[in-house]
Image (cartoon, each protein chain N blue to C red):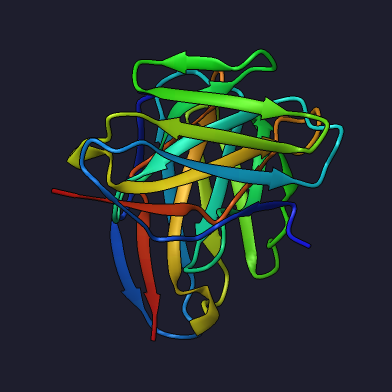
Length: 110
Length: 109
């Protein structure tokens, strides 16, 4: 089993729709969780951290479910510019190593 | 965004030749990382550094070595490149989380 698992997609979604995807992780001791966004042939960039209480940043909402060991990302009112690969990231241990999911590809269609 | 640059951005080399990739950061971050990214895989850690001259192996370190003589520079060396090392290589440094350089596309023929 991979340490961090994501549905690779692609998710094909019409502009303006709401889309959500989950990520599961295997290390119950993980404390830090992130969503990164990666555009084609570019470097990953931090989208948002995921806090225990859940957090929202504009159209993006991230939630953490420790009991079931998954995190989720919800995108409302999707834009064409949201098309990208979304990477789920979990810390491995206290020495700042991160474990990366392979990513979920999102395609927003006009 | 953290100021991280990588050089070269693209390289084509032949099997058996040595290759060195350079990462430079201007944020005075203590931690730096080298990853490779391949289709179907998440970013995989090759080596990381937690200070000048302090480095440790990641999950895919075989065939790679690193050096960190200054806080701002982290070098990745492929001693004798193989075709399986064809990949995109990303360097990152850690502030509140990890921030990445633009990547190096390496092709080993």
